Image (cartoon, rainbow, N blue to C red):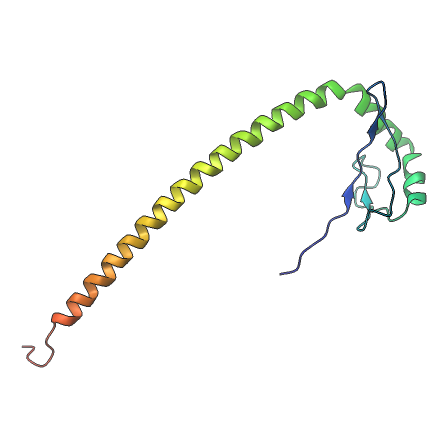
Length: 131
Protein backbone atom coordinates (compact mmCIF):
# COMPACT_ATOMS: atom_id res chain seq x y z
CA UNK A 1 0.00 0.00 0.00
CA UNK A 2 1.51 3.31 -1.08
CA UNK A 3 1.05 6.56 0.75
CA UNK A 4 -0.48 9.29 -1.42
CA UNK A 5 0.75 12.79 -0.68
CA UNK A 6 -1.72 15.57 -1.37
CA UNK A 7 -0.84 19.19 -2.16
CA UNK A 8 -1.43 21.88 0.46
CA UNK A 9 -4.69 23.85 0.28
CA UNK A 10 -4.39 27.61 -0.04
CA UNK A 11 -6.10 29.73 2.60
CA UNK A 12 -6.14 33.52 2.33
CA UNK A 13 -4.79 35.64 5.18
CA UNK A 14 -6.83 38.04 7.30
CA UNK A 15 -5.90 41.72 7.44
CA UNK A 16 -6.23 44.10 10.40
CA UNK A 17 -9.87 44.83 9.50
CA UNK A 18 -10.83 41.14 9.51
CA UNK A 19 -11.06 40.86 5.72
CA UNK A 20 -9.64 38.02 3.69
CA UNK A 21 -6.68 39.06 1.55
CA UNK A 22 -4.35 37.14 -0.72
CA UNK A 23 -0.89 36.52 0.62
CA UNK A 24 1.39 34.36 -1.45
CA UNK A 25 2.93 31.68 0.77
CA UNK A 26 6.60 30.74 0.63
CA UNK A 27 6.98 27.81 -1.71
CA UNK A 28 10.18 26.69 0.02
CA UNK A 29 8.06 25.01 2.71
CA UNK A 30 5.49 23.62 0.27
CA UNK A 31 6.86 20.32 -0.97
CA UNK A 32 3.85 18.92 -2.86
CA UNK A 33 2.45 22.03 -4.48
CA UNK A 34 -0.48 24.26 -3.62
CA UNK A 35 -4.11 23.92 -4.64
CA UNK A 36 -6.53 26.84 -4.54
CA UNK A 37 -10.15 26.11 -3.53
CA UNK A 38 -11.53 29.04 -5.54
CA UNK A 39 -12.72 26.79 -8.35
CA UNK A 40 -10.89 28.48 -11.24
CA UNK A 41 -8.93 25.34 -12.02
CA UNK A 42 -10.04 22.67 -9.60
CA UNK A 43 -7.36 20.09 -10.31
CA UNK A 44 -4.50 22.52 -10.86
CA UNK A 45 -1.56 22.32 -8.48
CA UNK A 46 0.79 25.29 -8.34
CA UNK A 47 4.46 24.48 -7.84
CA UNK A 48 5.98 27.96 -7.72
CA UNK A 49 5.02 31.43 -6.58
CA UNK A 50 5.02 33.01 -10.06
CA UNK A 51 2.27 30.68 -11.34
CA UNK A 52 0.27 31.19 -8.17
CA UNK A 53 0.72 34.97 -8.43
CA UNK A 54 -0.79 34.86 -11.93
CA UNK A 55 -3.62 32.69 -10.61
CA UNK A 56 -4.69 35.10 -7.86
CA UNK A 57 -5.01 37.84 -10.49
CA UNK A 58 -7.78 35.95 -12.32
CA UNK A 59 -11.33 37.28 -12.12
CA UNK A 60 -12.70 33.99 -10.76
CA UNK A 61 -10.23 33.99 -7.89
CA UNK A 62 -10.94 37.66 -7.11
CA UNK A 63 -14.69 36.95 -7.11
CA UNK A 64 -14.15 33.98 -4.78
CA UNK A 65 -12.16 36.16 -2.36
CA UNK A 66 -14.86 38.83 -2.49
CA UNK A 67 -17.54 36.22 -1.69
CA UNK A 68 -15.40 35.01 1.22
CA UNK A 69 -15.43 38.55 2.63
CA UNK A 70 -19.16 38.98 2.10
CA UNK A 71 -19.99 35.66 3.76
CA UNK A 72 -17.43 35.62 6.58
CA UNK A 73 -20.09 35.62 9.31
CA UNK A 74 -21.75 32.66 7.61
CA UNK A 75 -18.40 30.83 7.57
CA UNK A 76 -18.06 31.42 11.30
CA UNK A 77 -21.51 29.94 11.97
CA UNK A 78 -20.74 27.04 9.64
CA UNK A 79 -17.47 26.44 11.49
CA UNK A 80 -19.30 26.23 14.83
CA UNK A 81 -21.85 23.81 13.36
CA UNK A 82 -19.09 21.62 11.92
CA UNK A 83 -17.30 21.51 15.28
CA UNK A 84 -20.52 20.35 16.95
CA UNK A 85 -21.00 17.71 14.27
CA UNK A 86 -17.43 16.48 14.68
CA UNK A 87 -17.81 16.25 18.46
CA UNK A 88 -21.06 14.30 18.07
CA UNK A 89 -19.42 11.96 15.57
CA UNK A 90 -16.51 11.38 17.96
CA UNK A 91 -18.99 10.36 20.67
CA UNK A 92 -20.82 8.02 18.28
CA UNK A 93 -17.55 6.44 17.15
CA UNK A 94 -16.42 5.96 20.76
CA UNK A 95 -19.75 4.30 21.60
CA UNK A 96 -19.47 1.93 18.63
CA UNK A 97 -15.85 1.10 19.49
CA UNK A 98 -16.92 0.20 23.03
CA UNK A 99 -19.73 -2.01 21.70
CA UNK A 100 -17.37 -3.70 19.25
CA UNK A 101 -14.81 -4.38 21.99
CA UNK A 102 -17.51 -5.89 24.21
CA UNK A 103 -18.74 -8.10 21.36
CA UNK A 104 -15.19 -9.19 20.49
CA UNK A 105 -14.61 -10.22 24.11
CA UNK A 106 -17.83 -12.22 24.03
CA UNK A 107 -16.83 -13.90 20.76
CA UNK A 108 -13.39 -14.78 22.14
CA UNK A 109 -14.91 -16.20 25.34
CA UNK A 110 -17.45 -18.31 23.46
CA UNK A 111 -14.77 -19.52 21.05
CA UNK A 112 -12.63 -20.67 23.97
CA UNK A 113 -15.62 -22.45 25.49
CA UNK A 114 -16.38 -24.19 22.19
CA UNK A 115 -12.79 -25.31 21.72
CA UNK A 116 -12.69 -26.65 25.29
CA UNK A 117 -15.93 -28.64 24.76
CA UNK A 118 -14.65 -30.07 21.48
CA UNK A 119 -11.50 -31.27 23.25
CA UNK A 120 -13.56 -32.98 25.98
CA UNK A 121 -15.81 -34.67 23.40
CA UNK A 122 -12.82 -35.84 21.35
CA UNK A 123 -11.13 -37.31 24.43
CA UNK A 124 -14.24 -39.29 25.50
CA UNK A 125 -14.98 -41.01 22.17
CA UNK A 126 -13.71 -44.59 22.02
CA UNK A 127 -13.53 -45.36 18.32
CA UNK A 128 -12.32 -48.98 18.78
CA UNK A 129 -15.32 -50.15 20.79
CA UNK A 130 -17.75 -48.09 18.75
CA UNK A 131 -20.93 -50.13 17.95
